[in-house]
Each structure stands twice: as structure tokens, then as C-alpha cells.
Amino acid sequence: MALYLIGDLQGCDAPLGRLLQKIDFSPSRDTIVLLGDLVNRGPDSLAVLRRVQGYGAAAQSLLGNHDLHLLGVAHGARKPGRKDTLAELLAAPDSEALLDWVRQQHMALHMRIGTGDLLMVHAGVLPQWSVGDTLVLASEVESVLRGPALGEFLMTMYGNEPAQWSDTLTGSARLRAIVNALTRLRFCSAEGVMEFDAKDSAATAPEGYMPWFDVPGRKTAKATVAFGHWSTLGWLSRPDLLSTDTGCVWGGCLSAVRIGATLEERELIQVECEQSQKPGKAG
Image (tube, rainbow, N blue to C red; front, side, top):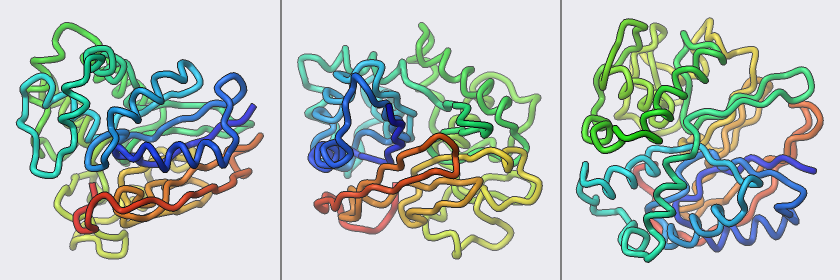
């Protein structure tokens, strides 16, 4: 049995097929965790969701900003964007079942590997959140996604405020702050104020901000946090981090990381991807 973490797909089904073949993935033996943004921008979001859903419990997925946007468009909370490639998926005869599968997926996941903690999110974790805090807050959003208030939530999901977390936040502001941290975060201040405009490499942080994972005193520093979302950051492996978005949709690579018996045992497996979007703004 093997565990593989896979970076952003963004509707690129053909590279996913090649990657799974390269790792000799078997749903009866192995587990894959997709680190969010399964859909959008690429050509085959429908094929991606059908493939992954078909693997049953052998495939788990985190929800990225594009996956939540899919739900938003499907429920009329937002019109499709100019670069969205969701029309075929939304028009498919099994779209309702696929959308229901999406809303059952996770905002954060945790596994104990050997003696270490592996925390998986799509984008990032605010510095004042512990592993336990992150899972509890993620579950708040998951409950809404899976419940009767989904449509109401999606109507208030979009927006950059509040830009800073407070335990006193309530209602839609609280949920939006959690969603933004887990699915959109790249840079924040030492106090945890989130910045959403900058999308370039970690070396180009706006003044007063830094990559979320470099904030001093970050409470998840003793865990290994695996994430995607940041294609201009690319592959990064260090004891406390695994960055896995290597820009498949932009013509880069699709990456899988095989996790061994301990979190120190990591193997990177990649396949090259056809360019589906011109590099520019990472998503």
C-alpha cells in the first residue's frame, strides 16, 4: 500500500492518467490525495471528476478555490469567468452526482505518518492556527457545504474581507475568512493579515508580507503541511512543507509525492503536461 499526494490538476485529465500509470496506481492497494483545484482552466474537468469519483475511497480530495468556484457557478452565485472551462461539466447528464461528490470533499485532512503529523490543505494555514484548530475550522465549512444552507453560503463566499482571523468572527465573515486562508492564501503579514493580489514567487513578497509558511512562530511548524495552489512557487520540499503545484495547466508538470513510512521518506514523481493556458496569473 502506498500514499501519494498529487498537485493541482485544473481539468488536465490526460496528464493525470499518465501519472497514475507511471506510479502504477491501484485503487485496491493505494491511496491518492488530490490537493485541490481538480477543475477549471484545463480541457477535461468532467473527465477528471468522473475518473476520481470512480476510485471511491482510494481517492480523497481537498477543495481548492476553483472547486468551490465550480459550486458557486453551478448554484448561480457567480457567473462563469472568461477563462473558466466548466460548461461541459455543468451540462453533463451526471453533473448533479459529480457536484454532490465535490461538496462531500475536504477543506483539510490530517494523517499521522510514523511519529509525524501530515496536514494537507489546498493553499495555506494562518500562523495562529494549530493543526487541531485548522481541522476544526475546516469542518465548519465542510458542514455548510454538505448541508441545506449551501446556496446561501455560496452567495457570500466571494470577497477578500475580513483579511485577518479572529476567534470572534461569526456567520458569513467567519466562513469566508476560513475559506480564503485554506484555498487562496500565499502571503500574509507577521500578524496573519492576508494579501490576495500577489501571485508571483515567494521571493517577491509585497512589502510587509511574507509567504505564510515563513511567518515566525507559526503554530503548524512542527507538522508537515502539504499544499498546492502556488504554481509560481513550484516544487518545494523541506521538513515542515511540501509544495506540489508545478503548473500542469500552464504547460509545466503534474507532480505526485509518494510518502513512505515516515514523513522524511518522500519520492517525487512527475509527468510533463500539455499547455492549456498561457502562463500569467497563477490560479
